[in-house]
Length: 228
Image 1 (cartoon, rainbow, N blue to C red):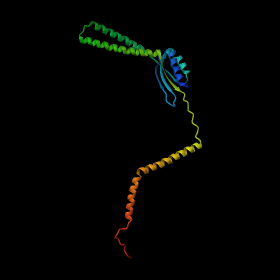
Image 2: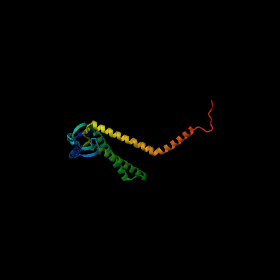
Image 3: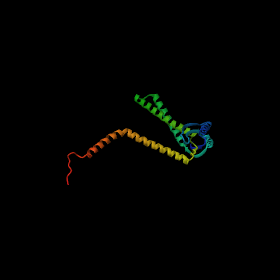
Image 4: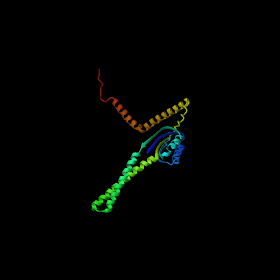
């Protein structure tokens, strides 16, 4: 018993049609999509990540059809031998079911005390829980053997945008003149706003300073000049 898993990266020209075709290929082969995530970012190539399960008998045909959707940039196939795990689980399941049956027979006889009966019931519950867990593991292994897992990444081919034409000399001069004019207007407007906000205050304090200076400059009365 071999479980197969594949990872593949495809670069496609038409993203949406390729994605729809991929899902159709999986469903036509009897498989299904387990997970899907699409990323669409402005000015960036679209990206989709899908995890699909297809019958192992159809794996080669499905992969061949997937390769035709675009250019394969990465592909890897892995296999795991699970025969021993399945055989071991089946043996443990047989032993657990036999133990469960013996416990049920003991419980049906009810020859012991109530405490002993309760202990048997708890042991039966524990055994059944273990049986369910091993059965789930066995089914999971068989599922991996019957259905191969394929993780596919679809990438849209990046389409570079055309660069704008270079700006001419006259256009550059005009833009520079407009920017200079805007700067001049902004400077004049800034000075006007500054004067409107602080002009009266500066005028008041300037007047006081000027008057003080005039007073200090006047000669003091009663001061005689020395004679030679």
